[in-house]
Image (cartoon, rainbow, N blue to C red; front, top):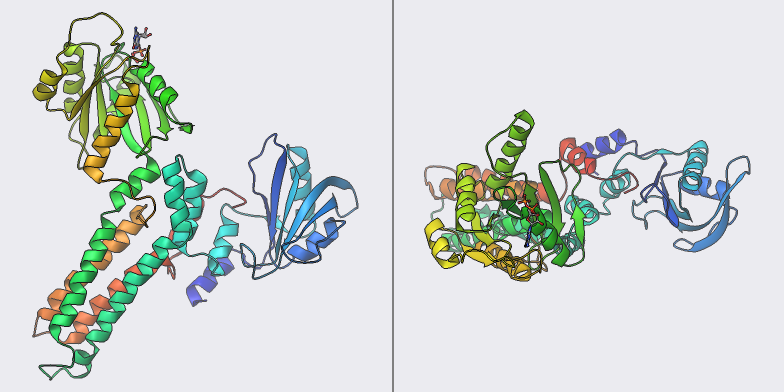
Length: 472
Ligand code: GDP
């Protein structure tokens, strides 16, 4: 353990024994209580009438407080350090659910000498004890927060250590280049060392290509993790809310309502193939009636600017034109590729024929679909068109290969690439000693190492574990 992470351990109160309910509060059949730390087994033996004779063994036991007052009949599983999730002595109790039983048991465990865990403290201890690296701890949070099967698969891959291994291998290649130029450092006067410069250059080119390829997975990784932002835009009454519901209704099972939605925007994650979609129904981009509505419109516009796909909805050519104009007025897209998709709504109603092909050309949109939320006609086609547009822009999602899912990862890889660029410049400059160039190689290796672990700042860990629930 480095001095820095030792102080991190002290900050985190690693000597304490911690307890938390790992399952959400409320009525449920079971509740899982976790206890970890040096006193865990002493506390377990004190409160459980039966204690498993072996680690990783379960026992059905009565649970009582320190005064012998019966609290529950539960299953206890014992884990011995270092073969536990945290790397410490620990145990887990599967108790009856509800509010009272878990609360009284946690209180009894605290009375026996534990303290309540902070958010993410179990995973933090696992990290400090070398059971997980930072990428895997991030994946744990992503898995819990996964809103789609694609996000689940990507998080599982990261949890398995796939991304850690890939980044570790790239770091090894930086170290190999360091070894290749070692002769230049030791014998600066020699023109031709035993390693031909072409070999070093070849290794450098190949490494930069690999880093760029990994960096290119970031956009897809973000789309999988967050869901591709798809925004419904159009005048009032053209059928946006109905389409929102029809898309949710027709999509595959998992629908996650996102908390914090307002009267002006509704959000849901649709587990669509191949990309999960974060669908947003905005209040409508129309002229402000009052201040509250103005705020709603500003939010709609910011959604439209960040969207990967905007559905310009209308029941006829005129209202589709108006939707597209409002989207343009909302401002420049913030994503590199924002697709406009024209959606003619209410196709079950008799209305004037709308020449979608002509509109497509006129409005410079990417695709056009005709739907009826009433009958369901065209809804699957719309979902497929959205998926096709996203794949055209980002490529097919990589679910079974390591991908970058967070800004932190992108920054780390980009920093390594920049350091390699500076290395190349310094190394090819004959007037500079090779030691100067080597400094950049060293920084590139550090940037990659920091992505996996060995992080020198508490900030990254604090930021990471803020996202965790207590008991994880
Ligand atoms: P929004 O203001 O754009 O969100 O529009 P709504 O979804 O609230 O729809 C406005 C009206 O159009 C409602 O009365 C809906 O029932 C109706 N509507 C929406 N979609 C369809 C459709 O596909 N077919 C028919 N016949 N009516 C629809």
